[in-house]
Length: 331
Image 1 (tube, rainbow, N blue to C red):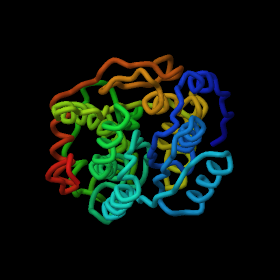
Image 2 (image 1 turned 180 degrees about the vertical axis):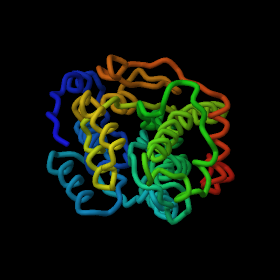
Image 3 (image 1 turned 90 degrees about the horizontal axis):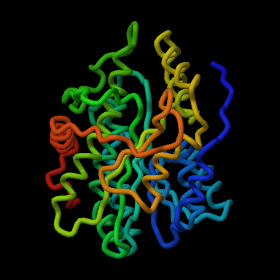
């Protein structure tokens, strides 16, 4: 599959509008490449200390070195989102190392797309665990640090990364995708649609978690933690290539990936939504940002809410059950 990368149209002007992030701590999952790495570079350039939460690999080491070589302040903390034990270990490390300063922004960016129907070591669909359940658990683990930053500097933020693949407003979440059904949800045979349904459910989960967290956190006395979400639109982030490498080479896979790349914006412009959520001064909890032009392209703008009380209740209860959390706000 060949394509011509698109020029960056919006991102540079957007970044110039952001205030300094000096003195802030930004934690980002999935930042070895793509939009996560662009965000890490941006936040470091604005003066933040960046915590890069990645699965240990030479790529993770190279991404850290790139941020450091550019003059940024960054550290790497191992975090494998396919393992709840790894996420809990990362949470313990973060609470130990950042207990005094806290975390100003947790960006739950990492994601995988269109992969085979496999179970993680915890028994869940690999897409749902990597894209949502482990981020739910990580947010729980980091919550005291968010509250610390909020108390010290006035606010903190949790930023989730959804997708246009979440579907139209009103589509239901289904509990079976959040249960220990990994390897039994389909999509490996012809025509392979179920793998994309699993992806759609995980991306809808990202948005519904944002709304549920906004509601539950907002009920806490003196809450200063905002919950926000963004979608990138079609972006030339490298995620499509990873899908192909994971075996996504059937006709349906090639069609979906080809359509995405046909209209793709640059990886920088795709980063605009999460960057606004993480860095802009004028965001409100519960806000959803992303491009809203033809084919979901254009600058990241504030989108209409897609609240769904049934989905929000389901994502909260099923995610608590899946991760074994009894009190979300006390790890």
